[in-house]
Image (cartoon, rainbow, N blue to C red; front, side):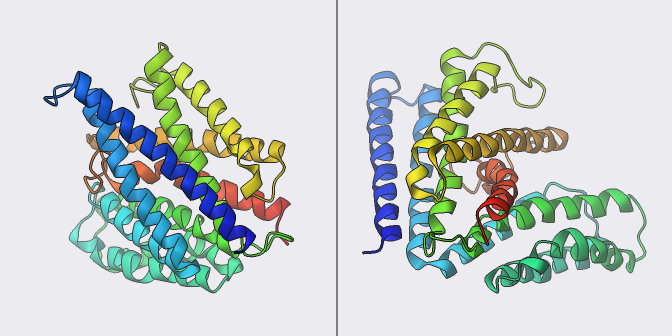
Length: 315
């Protein structure tokens, strides 16, 4: 068994251990405090735990399938997220060609270029070429009503759902001396730290939260929850240095950077939902809303994490 496989197994066993403990706690709380399902907080907690089981199993299967499995998983996530995003933006019949190009040309091309490890192209394909050609395709239909708003929303959808999300599997393309064959652990590090930060911010906020940090965007977020979650997740990131090419200090600093980006990514996505007057992006995942509701923190932190690692550690 290779070192990467052994580390991945240890990591997965640890995650399953945490989920088992969380499931037991949720079951006990439900039996004692919400046997009839009347306690919304406990019911929401158990729904989240069940959803996490599903997501962890799916990600685990993708990891087992290797590079192809991970890329296909995130390509599907991008497709589903883009679909959720498009349902909330201003589109007209004249935008159908541009939207078709986004789904069936731009998205698969981005992931193909990533598969081919063409960094020079996939790093600029969407923010340069797709952004230039999207308005050209749309303008050919001749409808100029709210043209700028419509095109900007499609471009922003591509940026978040495809470009940013694709930087998670893009970690597999990095060549780090002495870390060959272990890049999947970088994806595990990114997802675990960012998602744990979200969970820990929620927990710290429930326990000690008093000061609202952005009441108009996300009433449940507090200064105490933010600080507690970021610090806790950064320490966990430092403790996970053994699955990365980083020292404990470097792992902690990178964890701090991606948790900060994840937090502000969540705020940005909350602002978009408030603008559209919806609570969730969708209902794909029971207890978690839509796929974007789970990806918002990751997609904002993934490009930053990718480029920091590429600049300082890759060759």
